[in-house]
Length: 469
Ligand SMILES: *Cc1c(COP(=O)(O)O)cnc(C)c1O
Image 1 (cartoon, rainbow, N blue to C red):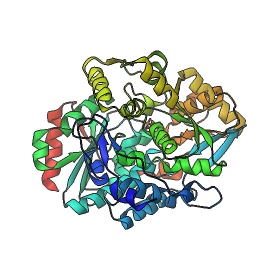
Image 2 (image 1 turned 90 degrees about the vertical axis):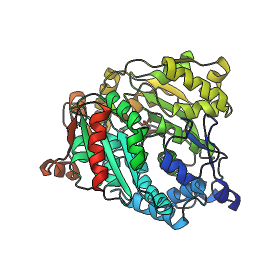
Image 3 (image 1 turned 180 degrees about the vertical axis):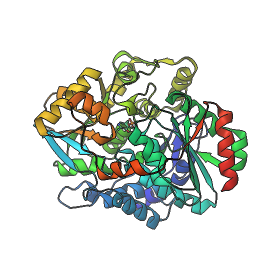
Image 4 (image 1 turned 180 degrees about the horizontal axis):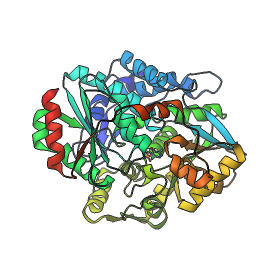
């Protein structure tokens, strides 16, 4: 990596309105000032060593190198190295994200050995440390507000509990997250964590968060931000495992990514852009298939979200799609801004034929039905003895449809089966064994405040928390 890149990594908005934020600002802001998403102004060079399969390199080392490439001089080097090491050490597997073969040329990349057993830990454990480091520089205290359908909230609460300079508020739809996911959030006993159980659905929670993030009364008290999947810090934390997998499989692999907001899949796109041997990239979605319709039919249109077994993928307007449109259009901010303004106004945007063709050169997407998801959980259990979660099953089902071109096919295993025992039991006929960490949650007291799905209700409890800190 040249010194030039270390110094000049700047972030621009996909909508053209933000000029050159540093990595620390991109991290603290989340969303760019014009409502667009941050992307690096230029793509950094990775050290050649990183891609050299002959040399052994630990996950922490790879992750530290990625952070250096993207942060440049915006954060002290020791903070980046420390974040990478501590985050990797929070995982229970020595390889952090091990590969497991489940068929001929077919592999799972297990991303669920972190503290809350979903891939969200990979990035969130880094984010917590990097955000604290960025705040040390600015001396501010940050209020993070995020909505969750389960995994993001659990990973965020675990990572940010007890963090300096930060309070975190997580809104989950009451009764609509799995009991394991709920306990992972509500049994954490830390002053800086507030769980809100909203009497509504996930869409209510998201709308409330959107309003709270721009709420004048909160903003008068605190800098307010979020940790959702559009944050560039989260993307940076999802690149290392693509490198780990390619290195382990001789340098090249074809990836299938269970997809909701397209964050994990876009990280794979970035990995390829940086020179990693990502031979193919396929987003696997459930019946919420806006991405498939966009790529195949040239219309990006929001429909009502359908509840599926792969709950963390029940997303109708994948937020990171904006980054893909920006890149596929040849980084045309005008095109991107118009496209997403149309979509925001009408819930629908036409994709011009040349843009559609460009998008299809970057990624493909395939949808999987609920029956196929259940059959895949049963098949993998029968053939290998392994339990897989419904999200992973969506990916495996798509991987089996891909033509065999000799490249190993890697499915990102995004959560541990034990997080979704009911869905697994319905498909397989048995409940997956429960890891100790999950069993231990049952006896702990839970803390959450139940509220109506209104901005006023949320603001009032958040203001109480802010007043105490
Ligand atoms: C969040 C999540 C996904 C979807 O990831 P995106 O980055 O939103 O596409 C898939 N599987 C699980 C288990 C998740 O928690």
